[in-house]
Image 1 (cartoon, one colour):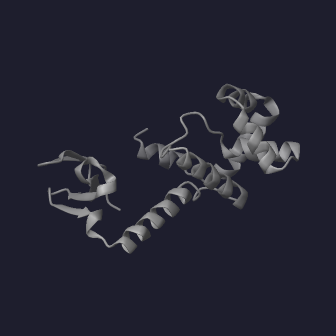
Image 2 (tube, helix red, strand yellow):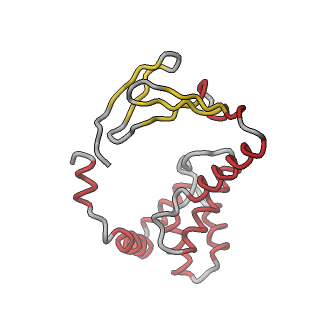
Length: 175
């Protein structure tokens, strides 16, 4: 996809809409509330409002189902095995159920730490997960710094990232 360059388009009733390098259309929450729907904005300033209230209840339910499935799967594309994928999906579900839509705010644990501890201890995933949940962020950070655990995590990351063209990624960042 060709780079179009960054841009800012002023839209009456919305304000400034920022476009990234490749954005052709940007979705802006309708009236500042995504649960109401979306206003789509083009680089020319053209808009189209799509209020959720226009949809029949079965379509609204289908959109909720699609969105929740997508949210739960969002981070699994880069993961290599089923156990990692399920760990990520379970963690995402727990965060959503706790009212957190984005990130863990430092209160979660990463799937590499979980997988390494399961491998090293031979304990069941559920037991290690329960232990990790009971630890503070500082305790989990300290675990990650223990030499055996740190080395095992680094090996997992190295395996997962071996085929990545890091120069290309840094180039995208202008570095």
